[in-house]
Length: 273
Image (cartoon, rainbow, N blue to C red; front, side, top):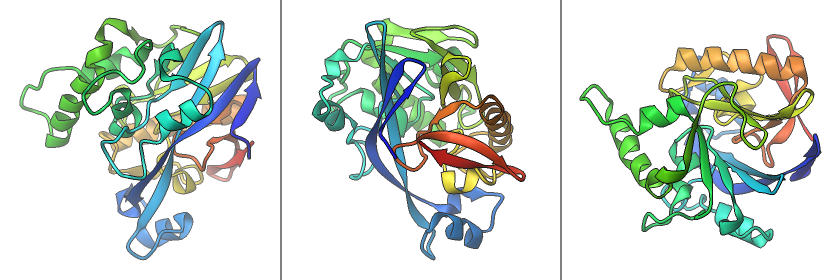
């Protein structure tokens, strides 16, 4: 498996932010024993999943897909800035950051511990529906988790507010088009990058436990704000990816997270490049 993938005239590079400790207890629609067997988790269900980020250059732009967790979550995360610099990419050279959604392991890495922009020259591309939900003021109907995440997202995006591009389905920026795939979050987005069969999709958390949800796409997770809607989005997008033969850049697929889907029964098989 390579951490560099050439497609459609682009050179897509994968960068790790680290690994995230989670549990098969978060899987919905499957017995823990089966989930443990599929993921290799121990009896307690504990398992690590990768947090992959991706970068490509196009027409003078340097585009990063998601921004990692920063130093806010677990000691096994927050590796993205160092890995970018080690590969020769200064953080101030990033011109655009695509956000699949605004959750901690995808957006907390936008800022340092003091709340300053880690990518001082980057424009943020995010679906308008996602941005508007997480930047809205609370009205009292929200869960505690949503309230906490909104507060954190106001910190994450504060230094970028004058350079956020709120995008809608069908818009194109630096070759990137957002495809709304809600459920995991209200504006969760699959980004289609490139055209025709020479395109790839960055699918964010369309799949969270890749060892489970690719072969068993009906399985949702407790991380989804709307598990049923997330399931429908996953089924629709996986069908599109397999039907069109699109390459995949998966945030939580086995590192480096680059591959293709093929159909198998009622599910799919992930074939790394």
